[in-house]
Image (cartoon, rainbow, N blue to C red; front, side, top):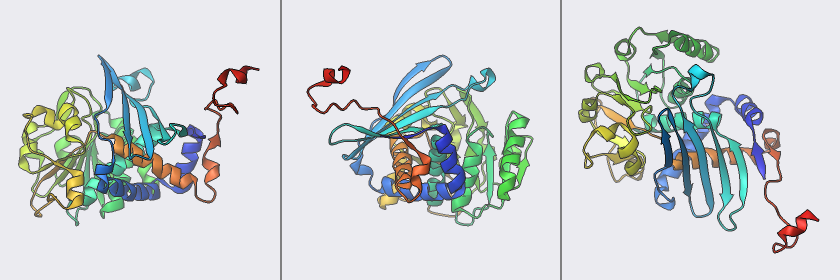
Length: 338
């Protein structure tokens, strides 16, 4: 089977260019969301502890099975670890054999940003030019590039409680010709924004964005809430306009709408893409994407990567490993010991 480790993943992303990869992944993700009914849909399987969570995220389209193993530990950077690490697998449904094993710490950054880019293309005003970021952690550069892939972003402003993180974002994006303005508060970062992305890591019911910070016509990608007891928005922001989710049963547990009643109305993204529900209906409308991440997005990122590996030259980005015991006689597993 094919194995994409960290060095191969870095080579793929550098050689292909993260901006181009995000553009391709956004298109692939939209295609998969349009086929929503073909997927097995279930909330992730989570194991929580006081300082974080470990999760399995499975799905299948009937031909290919995918899962991701991922953690989320907000205190990790202070201890020298990544907040999020992950790996994923693709397998053939007809025989259950895995065919691709992939590091997904980097790939998840692409996947999460691609989801935001897909939603921005679906819901933000077409003339949106100013992106405001709250949170400048490991996801932030990818978020900027994904939004720029679908809207003519001319300004980026950011606030993070860690000034060094904002400076890191500014320095990393400079080679892409993107100037980043560092704000002194969340309100300043979003004061003139057309698109707002919140991507903070603290595992608590925080309010990093207040209702008074939201202007008419703004689209909000709220992607930091991803477990019970973790939110980023003033709950009244959700009442300013329609709220859009991936898989609502999961979002009611982990997203911003966990602060709302169980029957709080939302629209799933696939419904907008299918044309059965409206998206943005006016230039003045506020729209909110309550994004927690869902297994179909991981399916997209893995199958998109696999399609790239199958292109000419793709063999540079993986190695073959012998993971599955395959005796010549399927009934004689013990014979491998001879």
